[in-house]
Length: 369
Ligand code: SAH
Ligand code: SF4
Image (cartoon, rainbow, N blue to C red; front, top):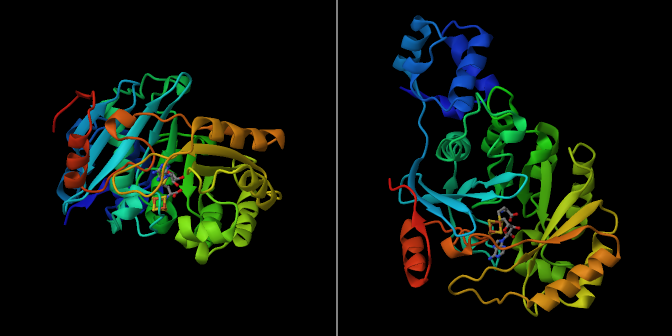
């Protein structure tokens, strides 16, 4: 049976090649070809002995998820839709900014955690993505964005940052996520620093501890409410891991985190979690954690019961946090003309097509499948 080499990090590839009598340095070579140079054809791996190339051709392959659509927003945001089989599609969004280019990737098809303001959650859970499907999003985006890592030095990298904030809960697919993270950090693969890779979690406390021990990268936590009563409703996993436990887990994480703060994400829901009193309550509940805040304007989707807070409310909420010396940013909504904004990432091609058709959008088909 053919093994997909995209499922392996360095350790996995070393073990696989050892089974075929090959030395560890071969794994580094193969890894570089696949991830740094984006090569999936073994015949093109010219500095690898012909005998090994023949072995690889007989026993292995490099299979990336297929791009079914590739859309460019007016603001430069680019959204890729990947077919992962069985009617499931996942999305990856590239967000160019002046000094960096961030790729937002998915870790599951759907999500089981059912946060009440999230369209992915509303679709239910289909399955975990494989390592190949997680890292394949980066592989494909690199190719599509025309990165040539043989020439580009660090500062020229088109994808300089990766955030696991697409579809799914990364820590509910911990093992595959960690293997994919190791590839992102590996100098023979994508060579990103830990600070430039961010995992966003809704707060799976035991898995936060495991991530800390296995592969600490920057951490964002989806908070969204300043007390358990409200968070129980918005983020139902809070019933299992309430705020007190979550805050302790953040502090344990910080002991090994590459950054000395956790980013708390807070979606702004009109009349639900956006009052002055709630901002002050938020200061109280996060008092013992070194943190920054990222306020996310709510992105509506069909059938959702919420509205986004008005701009003046978001500004006032931010002011209260800033006055308490907390670094607070308000996320710009990007790519909403192509349904690429937070929480709009859809699970089913069918669903997406219908939603897209309902909108008046201005997008350019960059590449058809
Ligand atoms: N499951 C992880 C990561 C994916 S969601 C998590 O929940 O953190 C990425 C971010 O988008 C989270 O902060 C999530 O709460 C936010 N989000 C989800 N739906 C949204 C919506 N409709 N509008 C704005 N942000 C949303
Ligand atoms: Fe899942 Fe995150 Fe959406 Fe909650 S916000 S349903 S954890 S993807």
